[in-house]
Length: 340
Image (tube, rainbow, N blue to C red):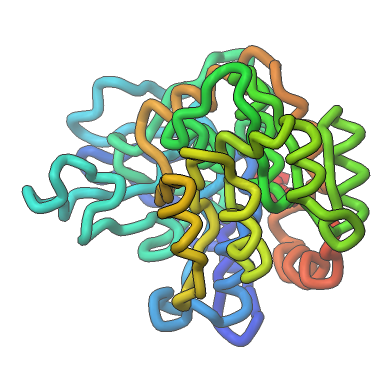
């Protein structure tokens, strides 16, 4: 039996290799990967933006679903045939100085970036990264559990409560998932997005949407809230205009959840934090309870996740998949079928 694996080789190039399927080491499981989603981080890797971190050639990918194909010595919680997803955080280097928050440990390794990932037919991972899925779950939708867990973490850290007004700045895949999770928590949700295709999708899904290039976002929210503005703001776009508006659209004692990754310092209007007693909340990846929340939501079918899947392609087309993502800024989530 051979393993078909994709590898990022640098300079916007992938190749595909056939290698022997390896047995899992003690404490590991071998997974038969069903689907693997392409994440924004994977696209950054493709563009060479993480070459200092990713060893080439490297199999990347971390948004996946699969079944247990073999178990290593000492693994008792999982058996062959179990449907699972991987929470791709290797926290074995955690220290007491991390204060128990192992998902953001200083020595945290992200599986699929710092070590081989899921864009392959078979994948060996530590058993402690696994979450078991219901046997009847849709494995295509299960590949969205990892990004949905990000959204669950963001909403949980924001302390969003039923009846509150939430503004999501950015209607890409994560922004849309944040909006879905916020709405399921009982919030009144507004999405701010400039891409008209994504604006149309959000409206089809029943969200209120403002294109800030065409309409004043703060004025709109003020009208909707009788001047109270937003209780919680999720900054998901990661650009200076959303940093500028996040402090304007937040109301008194509003909470701002910083979801996007900003690689460089940004100017921020700190006066607004003083004037309105705002809170700024950093949010990074997820914790186990966020994964369980995401699994529950997928299993019960309460979110319109199917609408986020732009296309599904066989593993062998990985090169063209990344090229097409570059050419299609309107797309949402592309899945690789790792068994096709």
